[in-house]
View 1 (cartoon, rainbow, N blue to C red):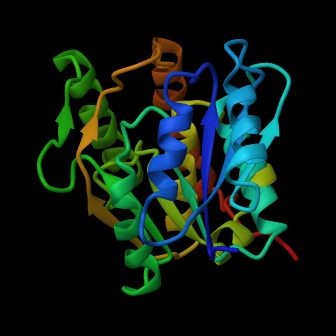
View 2 (cartoon, rainbow, N blue to C red):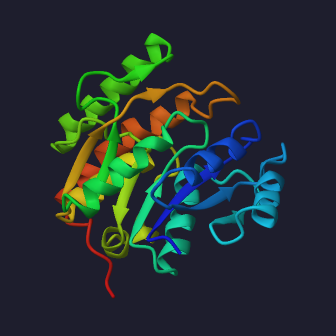
Length: 247
């Protein structure tokens, strides 16, 4: 069993899922994978189950949920699953190759070797490292992170990034049942909560590549949740409501 698990949420990712799994398993450093599938009607889960049965029975796992319940709830489900096992490092990663699997060892090293509690695959810590995104989406994402920095005073340049490594103790300390947001704002809330609780966070520069296959799940309502959610998070901190989990 690896000390690391990569959580990959999926909804209609049949074009990507087998390739991303094999790319992760092809790395020199071993990672296990947990797929959280929200009832994909395109057969994504069927592909994963086949790979479990034929090739990766001890390294690949799947949790299937009924219906599209949101990115945040998928990750919370995956975090709790991983914490019930003995993994020391727990990762978030997309299925569509926008996050390069080759960067996983760099995120891992930032936590294990450099002593950080959380590492973030950052598009913006060394300029703007985004490939094949429409300019409007690049600007929206970049200024969304600037907005979060302005409201929260968090020194993280890519607060909306979804490519993350957590040390186990971070997820054990955060009260996962108090995480409120399901979409884009989930990523902001997790980073802000970890920062507020005193964990050390490092940004690792990565190049984000827009998906080549499948359909993006991004929409304007997700950005709306993030815009209002950041103000809510700031007030929760001011009121002392962001607290570690009581054991």
